[in-house]
Image 1 (tube, rainbow, N blue to C red):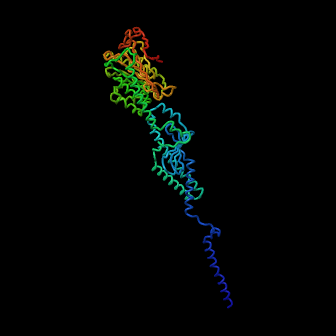
Image 2: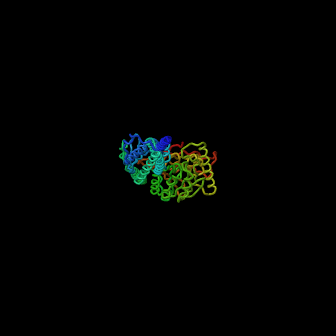
Image 3: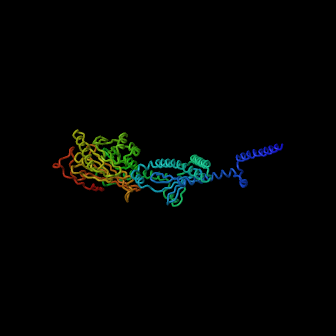
Length: 545
């Protein structure tokens, strides 16, 4: 019986061990309690967290724009750098160092567009001087450049703000999710700012800029673009009126001319080398009306580069009040020639083709060279002589056929010299100064100056080139040159005018009649003696180089 309590005692000792084992397992699965010190830190308010996120987004976006948000954009002849900057008022700031800056109220948004003019590109600037037709389209070109640059800036700015905000968020929060939230918020803010700027865009702000620095005196010095255009138009009108008044005065009071044209005289207005000067059309129209011109002859270089963009410059030709006879110059292209061929009242001559206009028979050939860049190509002189020989052959064929040509046309004098002896008169241009001579076999060569005052090249020298043209008087029956009036106007910005009448040597009082060139070139052994031009009153002829 004594063993029973011993057995119970052993059983009771085993019972407490089970719950202790269960307790150890249960405690191992429970999370360890937080340190007592964490209960003392207060929780962050949601608005505080939101403001902190916004601060991270703005600072990160700004840093991103500073690092990678710049875009270099060529705008017209200038190299610029465009950047977006945070701003309370928006607008556009154009920095022209070291002269100052222009501020435009272009838009209202929390971003400002900064445009720094870094430099003026010499090549593109020279291209504007060499191709003045681009000035009329410069506004559209600049608009396209700015639109393209703004699109590039928008893309790069999006990448910059997202990258900057995300990177700074990752540094601050050390959690990818919070960093991506910062980048997304930055992109949203930039898109909202861009939408606001687009909705409030004011293109007329360019007309009312605010100047700072040395540019603050710019409005009083140069005025705005609209007044400049208006004044140039007034200058053209006044120049045309000056021509009319001077020619009236000359016709009424001059005692120089021995020859006075009668109503039956054919009047030809010879122009050349207009080189895209828009003022020339007003002057030509004024002379056509004043002198009752029967036909206008243009010996080329009406354009500057012969591009299709220049063709609109030719549109006034149809409304000048007289037929227009034209040959191609070395600054005129086949594109220019085809455009003129489609115009009413315009007669394009090339390859020796002849046409009777206003009672006179003309034949001409286009310049074989197309050198709008004014380059000297190998074999240029030989090509001119070959073109002149082709024209001379065509003139002989016309004479053989019983339809002799009265006036031949070529652009360069070197080509015109090849027709000596085949036609009474040949007209040319190219050298931008007037000249006249009777060549060895009796053909008179008349070279016209620049009716456009050499275009923009007028400002290359110390003094602007004059505007020159001539009125040629022909007898209606013999169709021979009787006299010519040389008209010279002051160049760009000048208001001077000179008209002088000249007589061929054979028409001067007491002069013997000189031999007229035949339809074929005489042989050297039977050639008439060289005739030296006799100076006429008011003439200013100089030898051709």
